[in-house]
Length: 396
Image (cartoon, rainbow, N blue to C red; front, top):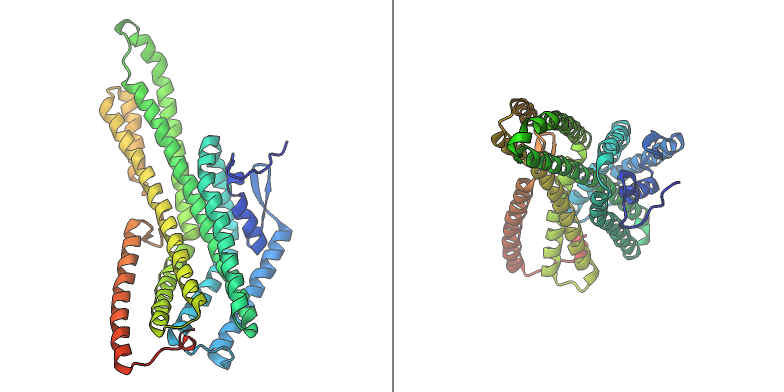
């Protein structure tokens, strides 16, 4: 019988990813169907995805034409123009990459479905508490913020605002899909490490002298088979991690660049409006919410990748502890092969050479802080010189 999906009660990879897949299907960027335990390409969903992405890209070209050639859309402020150009350009680029890599992404989802099938249901329930909350809340947050902007913005910019809203949702869902896959791989590494710890307890256990030979003859083949199985699982998860890095590398670079740009620009707009002392409170709130949204998203991505890398590194530590605690030649040889495999696999989450970890987050925070200190000093100096209040029109 088909299992019903329940909130915070995920039992497998499909039910865990159900909210993310549903939102992607609504946006027209999920051209697959789930049939029992496999992901398959859907012709109807593929046609819908093609129509949506083509219409999206055509309208993006129209926007750039109106911005840079015809002058129909004009931003008085140069920073605002730079911010919109970067957002639209990187967003359209992500949409094209998402459409082109639909085939490799299908293979990735199928591979993660297979390697995560051995995880216990308790692991999926723990993951669902985080993944369901962030997927559903972030989607509703962007929808709510976009609808408020549609109400506040002039009527002649309604289509442009809806385009920006769809672009934000597309970027959000691809980031959420990447983060969910990272969390599943992290739990796969954790499961391998937990099994190694159990094997280590068996290796270190002592038996009475009279039964040691019989126990050794029965236990040794079992331990060797277990180590070989764990080594094979580690190889499969490591290969899947490399596949994930390859498929989502361009998207992660766009996410990092766009998050840095949006946080910097929105903080700039907020500071300028604070000095202008405008009475329109909505834009103060909007810029702060944008900063919080992009900051939380990049922090969650970095946290997931950094904790996944640490979990993969613990496997190497456990294998070396087992090497130091056993004298059996066969087990020692198998552990040495396992150790060599771990050394040849750099299990880090990266994008085109850019490692996604706490170092990246630290560099971003340092760059933004330095920029803001220089900006505040410049604005205070220029504001005190001319004494002119800056209008909100000059910012927006």
